[in-house]
Each structure stands twice: as structure tokens, then as C-alpha cells.
Image 1 (cartoon, helix red, strand yellow):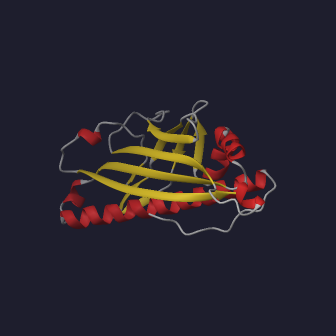
Image 2 (cartoon, one colour; image 1 turned 30 degrees about the vertical axis):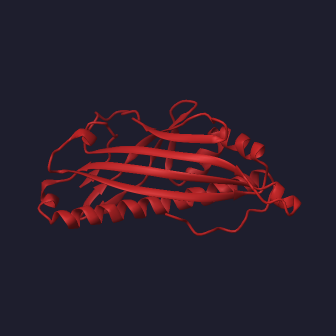
Image 3 (cartoon, one colour; image 1 turned 180 degrees about the vertical axis):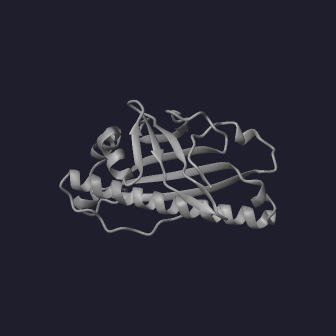
Length: 209
């Protein structure tokens, strides 16, 4: 069965036996071969890079700070979900950025209650501490962390399976989703920034969890 519905904040407060919470933490670091001011100006104008770098995920701008993002179809135990989440990119505060989840518009669909998403991400600009060369002086590191929680109301048939199996399988699926999407988005932002500034992009690095 495929569920393609908007998120709502009701499930996180539910104690129902069919409601499961899955959580994943992610962290990464991007090397930008430019001073912090140039990197900040790029990140501040997210109306350009966010939609380009989020592809092939579907992105719709909701206002000057917010977007509706369709992540794609994911399946576990034959249960499929196509989550659409709303994200708000908050203005920079002294070299720090925050991205939080909001409820996306319902369009032609009535609000449903099968999943709920709490997305909290933070980005920090860190100038290179080394100054052994002119290149190092122009290097900025963008570190970011994601704390993602997802509440899902599962079909009753899935709740007949052992609790540990259902929880572990869901946690692993969420971690894989986060790993794939976050790693791809990190690489594309890094490549897009350097391409837009006529710079050679540093090689990809391993992701840290």
C-alpha cells in the first residue's frame, strides 16, 4: 500500500500500538575554497541553489524561506510511504544557519495522520585555522548536523511482527534514507558552489555519522 500524504504533528504525542518513532542523526563537513563571506552570500540566496541541488527530489517553493520537498518512495515489509515534508531555511545568525520542519500545504488532499516528521538541521561556517598558504587562507568549512525523527502509523499486520524486528528494520531504513539523501545533497551543494564561482571543487570525502 502506498501512502502519499502530508505530515501532521499529532502522531508524536500518540501512545497507540501502531505508532512507531524512528530517529537518525547525521553530520557532515564541506570544504569550500573561498572566504566565509562568499560562502555566506551563496547560502543566503537559497532560492537558487536549494532547488538545483535537491534534484531529482521534487521541490516547490512555498514562500521566500520555505519549500515543500517530496523525498521519493520508500518501502519496508511491503509498506510504502512517499513522504512530503516542509522545510524552512531560517536567516543566518552570525555564521550559523538552521533548517526546521513545517507542515507542508495539503493542496487537493485532506490532512492525514499516517506520518509526522521533525527535521532539525544546523550549519556553521568555520574559517580555516591554518594559514600556511594563500589557498588555506581562502578555505571555509561548512559543518552541519541533522536530527531527524519520523513517527509512522503502521498497518496492524506489521505490528504482529516482533517489536525488535520492526524497530530495528525501521531505524536501518531511515538511516539509509538519510545517508543517501544527505550525502547526495552535500556533494551537490559543494559542486554547485564551486562551479558558480569558477573554482575547482575539492574531492569528495567520506561521510561521518
